[in-house]
Length: 322
Image 1 (cartoon, rainbow, N blue to C red):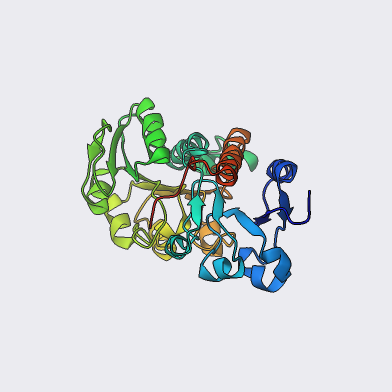
Image 2 (image 1 turned 45 degrees about the vertical axis):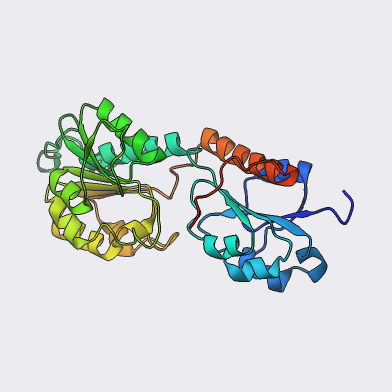
């Protein structure tokens, strides 16, 4: 490609497939070791001045300093549905579009949420350890009877693209579904609760599927966990910040709730040692969207948004205005 072609900067490390697809279409630079925030210190001025698009993850800090370091930047494409790390106000002030991949990984994340819910309620980790240790059916080591999913009340915190799919899967297990959103959805056939606390009071299990922002930080706190109760379970496939991790550890340790299934953590990839030691929690390493189908869909949206931007067409999936 000519040396003066506009540049697509990789602010994070994409999959091999996405990088190859981008390289076929555009001149690319990066990924930058320090992420997009290091652009001002890493990129030569002549390169930084030609960066028209930034491809990154929504969790990565992308604010005014990044935009100022890339004076020709016109679009920030977030891989996946999240965009909480992007300062949309700063981008809008500079005329920079922000896109994301809503719904691209929703089915895969919902599958994992249901798996974590069943694994927590049915105590899969305890049963797994029992069998691996050769103590199956060995008298005192037998697992106590666990409740099933059928007939239980499952609350969904955040009935968006992912939450709606979780609700449908839970309903297929013959459980009763309720939800809390900022406002009720006219198309949802489930019971709406005006507050998260009210949902937790009603529910036997709470699945966190809410989008991460300042309003949802530590929304699931000690009070909500107490309302969930001693037989309650909490599942989080959204963002670790939605749960007060210290309060969750205490609730699991003290029997305030019965169990949890977690795919996300407050300070990823660090998982508190005390949380990892508990035997009433199921832990997975943020793999909700880690399926071939989800990655293909997320990558396709990045490519569609970039193609639209460079051709002057409307963007397929712009992030909502801040």
